[in-house]
View 1 (tube, rainbow, N blue to C red):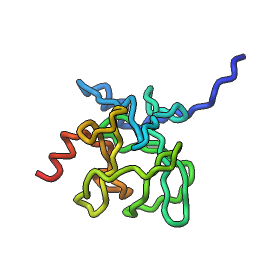
View 2: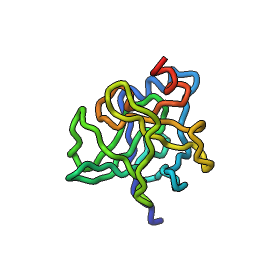
View 3: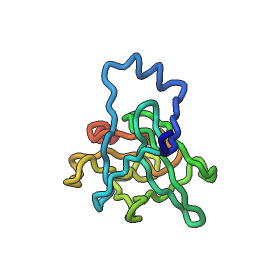
Length: 151
């Protein structure tokens, strides 16, 4: 018997139905911190897709959060149940502990956090999500969708 690394697979109730009815599903397969570390990890999967792993912290707590890599999905997994709805958190790279940069302010009062889509680390090729838990913009947003928030 082979030693396999254990993994968690999350199937949100609406994910399978939406996935079947969508013509195009955009999945983040690689994303990077400002120092070039890939944030896609194989410990948690959303359906068949590896999650985006980030460290999340406030003044008292620190933990890991796994974001759904499907653009527009709000699912996330947190093993330490200390997040508070409508509170802003800092997101950092789990490898180098670099804070993830702010793309822009969010309309909710939070900040849209940048995830770079390739190792050139250009803001023109990124996605973002709000650092305020429960914000309507908390799912992964593409650059074109980020621009439409403020138009």
